[in-house]
Length: 67
Image (cartoon, rainbow, N blue to C red; front, top):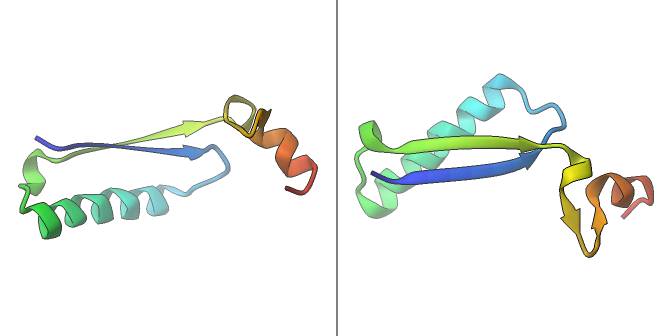
């Protein structure tokens, strides 16, 4: 049973976009590894930009600085 965990920043991904990610990740496992889509689990975690850091600073601060 494949388990895929997609982590994105919480910035307004729509339900339709998330559904497309789930479909696409599932289909990729079917196409590449021959996995059964009925037993493929895809989880999307949305993380606040204050809780996501890159290069020693939060995404919130990086975006405010124009990085």
